Length: 325
Image 1 (cartoon, rainbow, N blue to C red):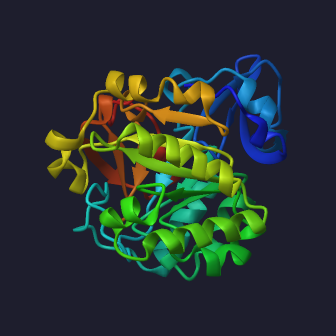
Image 2: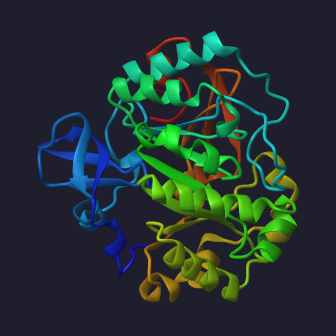
């Protein structure tokens, strides 16, 4: 889904690029999207115009012939200060210690992965998060952090010179609609975090899980809120029936076609770019959980499968070992 108003993406930002045939592919840490360009760019971290990148055609990572994923989600902890009812994480997973976190960070830094999104749990609960980001950036990765935003106001300054993008999860455009999912006060803390991230010049966007109970007015209001705050856009994510979300699937899961229809009008009229990640697009995505195990979403992202521990960079390979190639 391509927005009609990319005006908020005109500044220069950091992306990650890789040669693809006679040209290059570019990973955008702000949106998580992969773009194909007719230009030949250097490999690794590159500074580009957000407007230019947004104008380049999107390409599904699976269509890029590569030995490793274009991007991965790394969840180095299970702990979270909130309890979202559709959380994808497996709460039974044990967290590795500090030394193991750095081992994994170094493996990802030494790999050919373009982008790493650090998630959780709640990644801002990690005291050493800035140092882990430094390791990944030194290796040439583009790094984003996905957070519930409740600790962002106090941590944004330390992240500002390190992270390439922040994605803040919201469940509603106001405290009444957000806090009924995430708890009293969580909306105000998240908004304070968004304001501070923008004040620190961190490329920032809102993410929202799209549910059957999400009405059209809430969707429009979320886009309006994003424009008011000055964030770079809103990505609506199709709910995945994984983790805690499996219990909500029967009541709250939309089909991809229903989701596309729900956002069709907004995608061309909103004041900020509005995107939809359909469930099909999440198929095959690679997740590294807090225990150091590699997981991949099954086709259609209706389930996730555990593969093997991440012991060397070669364990990330998209091979018939896990059925991904």
